[in-house]
Image (tube, rainbow, N blue to C red):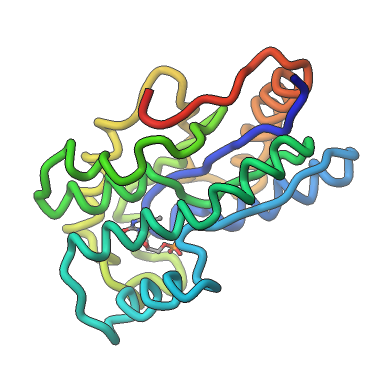
Length: 208
Ligand code: NYM
């Protein structure tokens, strides 16, 4: 069945995910593709506002509660994601369940417990991992304004992400000019959209 593709962009804080998604959307739309963007956390919902307040350091919450809130924030978008994909729209997602696992497991919580809440979410057709050294990232504008944005923790998150990366992920270094990164992202995105349009890829679920 023809459908849109679910494409996730992951990476450390300030690795350029948001900028890259914006650039890719612009190029893909110019070329006639039906594409849209989602971001997690989605700070517009009431769960997302609670998460946002926690990230800004205004609310104190148990780490496990925060983990479950991040997951709930994805589940509240599950139906919308499915409907849009089935309607033929490709979705570029700024962070997904991989960030959930990477950030909470980096605090020392049990791996399987971290995976649990997102089990059954729609699996992405492609994950693009923007890699960058935490040294470079901390020089980027806005770094340090929210929880987790410090080199020590980011190094741990980076190690945890490495445990999640599979051969299916596309790793692109973001330690280079913005346009060059976009240039590397577009061809694989077009390919996966083609495969989904041709009905070659059935929808999968996490974590299978
Ligand atoms: N984050 C994001 C998590 O800890 N768990 C999650 O499930 C997700 C989606 O939120 N430091 C963290 C990673 C970031 C922070 O993300 C906010 P962003 O992309 O800066 O808005």
